[in-house]
Image 1 (cartoon, rainbow over the protein chains, first blue to last red):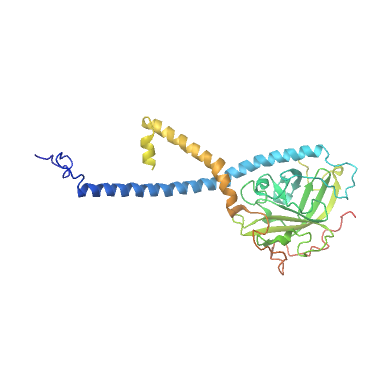
Image 2: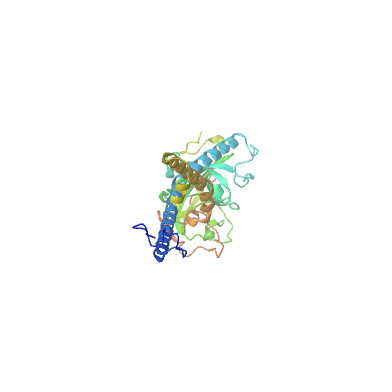
Length: 257
Length: 86
């Protein structure tokens, strides 16, 4: 029986019962290795693409989503200003105990140093979910204008990045909070860099544990450096003035329409 | 892996290209709306709050109050007390 020229030995021979030849087995093995290697390579490239997509998500998508959430919450806050949440006769000096639920916006923060017309909603509860909506008040700390330490946090990169330029804050810069009943003005004292577990910055009197506060102070926190968060940037300030809403915003501030 | 996918898709090659693009768009959408939001809080890049980090927290200010940047350190007591209404 003659065999076709060029055919591997045993390939077309109907009388050969012992299966593929050693050469054929080797060829099949090489093919499998090729396919496996290619799959691994494709896997790595896919992972790389996914990581790049995640970067795009962080840099673009979260900002778009946060801007939308911020606008919604700002509108809600402005609506809540029109409907007074506390009796109008309450004297400005008495802390108005406004009950704010977690995730609820209850004020507007104006910081001219951070940009022209920079205004963000103040949301209760410094959680990641709330940080997407604006700047978030540490629950348990004093509220704007109250004796003690009014502290809030904001993102420095991604998710709307309200505190992107917090490193530009200088001594004397204005931080103004508009609530339903008052305008409260703080001035920046100084900025420090601390470790993420430096909870002393949230004390009623930062730097003096267990001391009773005698003035109203401000603390703003964000991450440092901007694209990592192994430190925190803390901006301290103290209240300079508070006035009832009827008197209008302090000098240098234009109320958000 | 992708060659297998290409072979399994029905139709002539222009149709296959369209299907691939569709699959890509769906994957990206799934990633952006489900997978990435799930992963994001589990990564430490964007922590901006101060807390005890599940361990020991710094409850007292270090001497010198850490590294001060920007304006020189000013004692907080007495600053800004000019116009505070009594």
